[in-house]
Image (cartoon, rainbow, N blue to C red; front, side):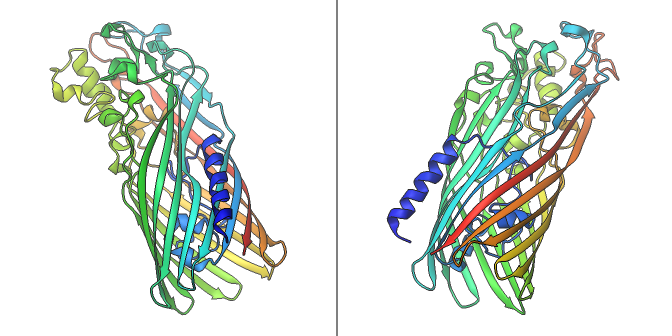
Length: 465
């Protein structure tokens, strides 16, 4: 592949990723896999390189792919995703009752179709060294509610968030021996975020509405348009041929430090900080026969690296709110638990442990079929259900399938489909969301239920040089 073509491909990758509205929430806010072939196998393939998407999972894959490029476009539908609040009575609030006397409501989110592009290419410098460039969607979250769930507390207009994350990486990979290969990918990571309808700030603190009353900086919390955050990431990976048709693969990505969202410094903990969590994957690929391959991966995503993702949401009402309303003594420590604080409330996400299983059958020289399964327990606990109305990433099980058809001797078309089965999480609202007389009245807080189901269809084109 010549360098002129490489630059052209990367220009297309950058422009398409920047202008496309990306949103994903499958394994938490990470995609279940990258590349049409990997997705069709449950996102597995850390030890089974088949396309340039494999490089996103394991940089060492680049040296096993020769000269090729892949382009793909997926249509992602996180629908239905919904919430329901039931059993709530806030008719006797403190210091004033909520409007309408209840938070009870239910609805499905708008904005249910998103395009997910991918483009990457590899270039073999010699028989032991390759370089690669890949532009891919990293992940994201999105939910938009036409009727504001917290309108009774003064929040106005539609409520929702939109987080888009993308990565542009350059990989260098080398065969150290005939059996062992190693790769490294430095990358530029870009994310965009917007929040709306979370409340109305006021120069008089007592007049703040919605979540603005629980923020250290209510004017930097909501309705401040999209803002971009940037960071430099790195990922390392290795593969080893164990013999007998078995290959071992592993990759590690440390936490990626991102610039703070200054426009949302009163929303995300630690003054608007939202880093990309560290993660690692280890897996095996077994070539059972000339036409049958089985891949099994284990992945862990460390959401607890990132305070704004993992800090529990209860501190928002039980500490920050309680102190501001005079139920407990106010101090710098209690203030730090408010939204945007050094110890600020977050989404309460746990680390995720994910199993990815895939099977590939080469039906003929020009036709391959794939099927897979992906499972990871929801990172959202029941006590954090209400705050995750903003980010209901609760799906756990994915059924995947796909096929590749050769288009001549050096080109191919791949189609994959992913269905994430509906899952829900339910939990009690904080006592502060119920009635006061003058203390919280037990049983008036009610229950929040969040639910999501997903479908994804992708078409990819690959060409070898």
